[in-house]
Length: 133
Length: 335
Image (cartoon, rainbow over the protein chains, first blue to last red):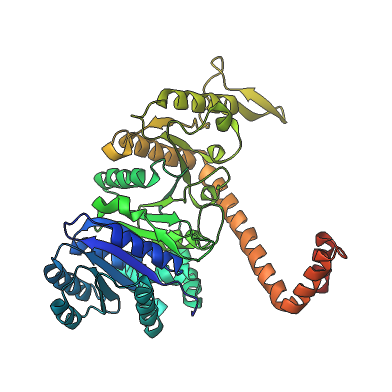
């Protein structure tokens, strides 16, 4: 169905307590007509993947500001694969150094959005993913 | 894409992924989803369905969280359907109920699904009834349905659930609020959450007074005539008379929750023993049948009429040439 709602899970793995960015994105995606499941702070990779499975989302958005993305992302991708969620796109936003972008994409992360990325660019990226699915 | 038959088979042998996908098909009202419901319907009717409703901020999600934990301690499997509103402007939604249920993660006996209302009024999404059926067919012992933050008239939950829990909190209204028609009328159980807040005694007193005004009477058949009987202190307590309990809880501290679950179980038994469960189910299904018929007839009529004819008629109404009721008669008799 073409008018199917895009469902996005917004989660914050790891231990940093800064959720303003995640909330801004949740709100922007809502205003773009998407259904956003917001799970909040301090999520383990297991919790995130389980929520993505139960909610049958199209996209998982991870917000990581702690610098732990190179530890958390591989674990999440591994669990996504084990749970047969390999058709669900994963994007990351937060403080990501440039040199980490390529390795993250090689893990299967479809989009990396650092500081200064516009909400429009994230919305466009998600719509592009959904159109392909 | 797997066939619906395969998904159902996988779901019935315990695949949560298949269950999640079936729910999406049903929620999106796709032809596959309709087909799935047709196949699953004979397997429904086994789960205990419990609705949780109440004003925004009374603590519904936190209550569902601790209720689920208590049910798990009693070895029951639990599915949760949590409904939040869709924006009337963008069509999007932020579904935040799961946020308060994080400590249920990792338990295979729990399945949580968030739903947006997608424009439906009444406190639930149109597809909520059917999503509950899928979870019922998946074999969960309990399906808890959390409505959107309800005002006074979001009473659809009573059509979707066997037992309705209305959640109140101190400081939300006085005794006049309590005697107004609305969600308190559909309560089988009233929970006063946040019972550590000031004003809890007044809230409980107002609610108790409201219940005493309304429920101490009972229609009885006496010598072939219906009579109103007072269920006061002088009469024998009637067995088939459910007294709506008021339970104080502090959901975030897991205080009073076991009592809520006790009462839900008791209410389930009460419905079975009095035969009220089948009466209620009949009423629920009758309402659903009529609602769906209305939808289908409306869609059918609009398909036949076409936008141009509708627009022309609307223009006549705007010009004060035809009144709305006559316009409707005209449309219906023409089709």
